[in-house]
Length: 205
Length: 205
DNA sequence: TGTACATCAGTGAACGCGCGTTCACTGATGTAC
DNA sequence: TGTACATCAGTGAACGCGCGTTCACTGATGTAC
Image (cartoon, rainbow over all chains, first blue to last red; front, side, top):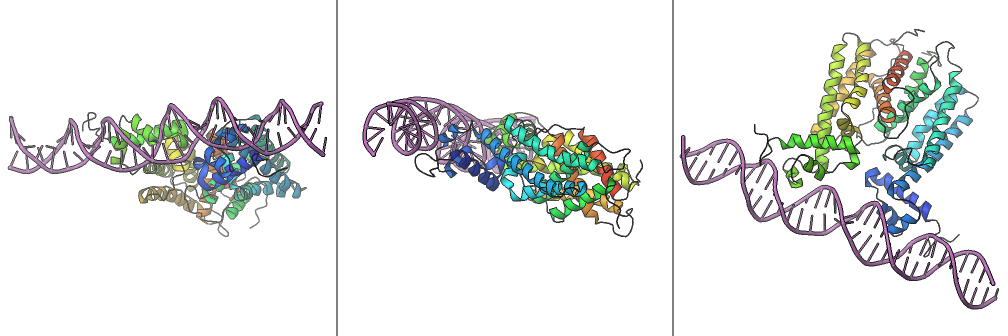
């Protein structure tokens, strides 16, 4: 497959990567279709051969992000089987790890303002990611003292919320808030305390 | 004080309110200085009599938001004294309540991309809000089984993170994620489980 | 009470800019014969 | 193997737009006398 010339060869993916790079460098607001085209070494008009427009390009970047994210969580989940607890904790940690490793994708997914329902492909990818976390939560649910266990989707949402909050407030410098603790420690301890509250960890100390 | 005429009378505040209204309606990206001026019934150039520019205007909106936010938390804190537990829970709930009641301010504060350190006044207002939550956490800290209590700033951060995460993922429709539960319930139960993990609530069931 | 004048909030025209998007085109690629 | 041709990815010029920002100005306000 030719790399360069009049025909680019793989422009679609090159545009996605240019977009990710720009989003990471300048925030979701700073990203423009024209600049992405320039970065990919191509005229702005060429973008329209591959995408419907600016939003569609961001949506594709987000979609690829969700796929990577889901893979990462799936991998973490598999790795720590058969311990439902360890697997659940690992999928939570994967959230922060993903935000750190792939900030461009993360921003496209969660901060760009593009709705997860913009395209069916994007919605599917996002749903798959969510399902993995929910499965881990369902596994764990079995181990909760029988009577009065909360629905699995509920504490999956709790952990997701805390993970997201830690990332937004302390791992990304967006609001300029100084982190009192390393985000990884903060999330680890927060989830630990939460799981203790569920009766899943012994009050060890 | 005259309301209308060649001289506006209270343009500065009118611009802040126009900005808030636009930010709420169109997102942080959709807001423009020119449109805020138009909304306030004034030429774009007039804005420069009162603000250094677009960012400065958003910063002032955010500052007013932090002041209201701090007042709201302070009020909640005072109301539930002397119960450290109730006061702490109330300040946490205040976060979600604020996001609901004042979405424009909330966006200016947390989603606009304006750094909290942009102006000293903004930094002060944000610091005051943070301190109130941290004081509530410190009060509560006294009640934690003596040996091995985590630092107060740590579980203040945990609660803040979960509150923020719930708001971002489930209370605002930004990512288009459908909420499995009413955000208020989700936050309430999440914080409840967390506090149980700290040994502050009896395993009642 | 009336007049002259300083202040300064808001005007309106103008600027250069990058944006997203369109269009008729061009020329590289790959296939049919 | 060589030639004709269809395909279609990318060009480049052009568009209208709203943006943030500047500038010399105008006219309402409020104060000094």
